Structure formats: structure tokens, C-alpha cells
Length: 471
Image 1: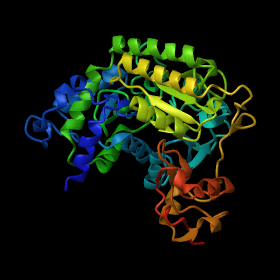
Image 2 (image 1 turned 180 degrees about the vertical axis):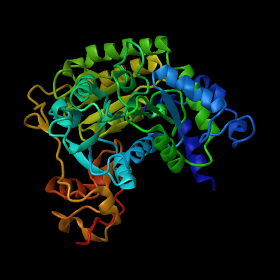
Image 3 (image 1 turned 60 degrees about the vertical axis):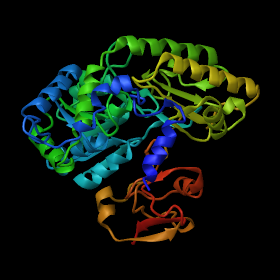
Image 4 (image 1 turned 135 degrees about the horizontal axis):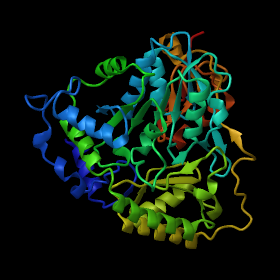
């Protein structure tokens, strides 16, 4: 009885140090305006309405728009997912006969947006960083080369791992060559981009629609986000109607109030500055023993800037796996990372982190290095050379695949067939294969290692089956 509540209570008593979402890290002082359960109410007189804001919600959204420099900001209570989906639905009628060019390292919610809107994707490959074997960068020319049939561009910036592409150059090229094309940016992991310590946000650079997953790094509750709009390339009425269609008709006032709380903490430069100093010290003392993503990677693999609040390390020099390292960090230091794969571990900072927690992380990583001295002759490169990501061929749009008849086949029989479901390793939620794409040998190799990963969208992973189109 009350198993979930008991599990939450037990976990909270472990005293783990959070290097994962949400950004508030459970700090009572940051969340103090929201702790009252009396605030979990419905739309009552004087409290305004999310889908027709005229009072306090409208005022809070205007404050957010002013803070981020947008013309209008919408509060999201269904996460950044609903922001991505609303962007696509708002463009569905105006892009008839046109394609939307999408960075393929987009979150799985973008595939959902394609299903809902019926838009036709044209994917942009990511550049793989050869030492991390992760999609971290982008070739700017891929955004607007041969784009006669392209009606919009959707980018993910920053990446889940904190890398930032040259968005400014992309927007300038749009303005020069294709001024009518709207640029949509999933800035889910960059709602804290404000001030001199961080890269410039997409709104300030001239993007038309920008979605923030505010809870990931700021003082907002999980599931709270924002959608910013600027300019005339996107019809605001269509955008509002899309949000009204997609978002719950019973929005949480706790979530909306937490977004206002996040605005109050947006320009806490002192807190970020203290964290920044400790992160730089961590980089300086450990880079070379561990492979750490730092500013030294800027200018390579399509990376323009680095968001230092994402601490990405590779433990390959230590001769151990990431899971072995994480077990030590969790059991010996109570450190909870955001994610890890075979050799990489990601630690995410938020406004709720304290400098002493970064110091603890540094000391814990120093302990790892002492336990497992870096091997002198180990091969640091995980792949042979710079390359773009494995893009399965697109055979149908995600919507066409969603509506088509399907059947289940064993993994070994899926090679060359068209995927009937979107399968993502989670986190980060980048689709391994999207509905409508051909299942390649690269995809099959991952599917055969089902027990090594957490999956979303794959209904038959325990049985070793996958949905394919029945054609």
C-alpha cells in the first residue's frame, strides 16, 4: 500500500547528492514559495486561466517574455514535449507541400510532433565526437544547403550533453538566403542561458520559436516549461490553438507558480558564479587523467561553445566501465549522476547545486583516478575518425508509419524492415530508430543488447520483438 510514496520517502532519506534533473535539487529554500499543498487548486475567480490568461498568469508570462527577450511566452505544464509538439502543429497548415529539416539528435518528442502534425521530416545528421562517441555537433551548411523544398528548420541547442552549435551563423544565413523560413529551437537544456557565464539564448539570436524545459536547470517543478515566440514567421493564433489542444484543461497551479519562481531566480549570478569556479577547478585538476568535455573541444566536431553546467567525463583511460565507476560514486560518495553509457558519465548542475557539492564530485573523481591509475597505452579514440551519426533511411513519414498496419517480428528478422515504433535509449531520449525508418544493422546491434539499456517506445523489448510495418 502506498508503495510509490514509501519508495520516494526511502530514497529521500538516502541523502544522495543530485547531479541530475530537476534543477532545484529539492532545496527547500529555493522551493519555499511552493511548499503549501493549499496551492494545488483549480481555476477559481481571481486566479486566471492558462488557456485564456487575462490576469495573474498573463502577468507572469509577460515577466518571462521580458526576461528572455521574446514577444510572447507561454507556460507549459506538459513539459518541453508539448512545446515541441505545439510548434509543429502551429506550422502544419502553412508547410503543406514543404518539408521540415530536423536535427536527428532531437528528442523523441519531436517524432511525436511529426506524428501529430503530419509534417514530412528531412533529417540533419549530427557530428560524432570520436572520443566520446556521442552526437555533439552540427555542420552549419547542412541546415540550408539544397533546401528548395524546406519550409522550416528545427534544431536542438544545446545538446543533452551541453554542446552548443553555431546558431548565430545559421540564423544569419537564413536571413540572407531564406528569410521566410522559421527556425525552431529546442533549448530544453538551456533555460539558464542568461548573462556572461553562459552562451547566448536562441531567442536573443533571432530564433522564431524556442522551447525551454525550465525544470531541468532552474527553480521549477518537474514538468514545467516555457515556449517563447518572436517575429511574424509563425502565426501566434495557430500556436495558441495548438497549445489549447495539447495541454491539459486542468493545469497545475503548482507547476505554473514554480515557473514564476524560476523567473525570480533567473539572474542569480552569484550562485552560478560560485559553481563556475569549482567546475573550472575540476576541469583543471582532472582533465588529462579523465577525458572531460571542456572548452578545448570548442572548434572541433561542429561544437561552437560548451555549457559548463554539464560535466561529461569519459572513464576509458581508467580501464573500467562507466557502470563500475557509477557504482563506486553512488555507494561510496552518494553521488547520483544524470546518465551513463559504456564509458561516459554525465553530471548535470542546476540552480539548486552548491559549490561544496562540486568539490565533493571533484574529490570523488580524484579517488577514482587513484584507484584506477590511467593506462598509458590505452586507445582514447572510441571510433576511428570524425563522422556523422548513423541515420536509418527514411521510408515513410512518422505519421504514415503510425497509421499503417503493423506486426511483431523477432529482432533477427527485423533487418531491412520499416520500423512501426519509435525506440529510444532513455535518457537522453534520442531515437535509435524512428517510426517510418528502415531498421539497419546498426539498429539491430543495439536491439540485441536490450538488457544493457533503459528503453522508451519499445513495447516488446522483454520478449525480443519489434513492431514493423506489415508490408
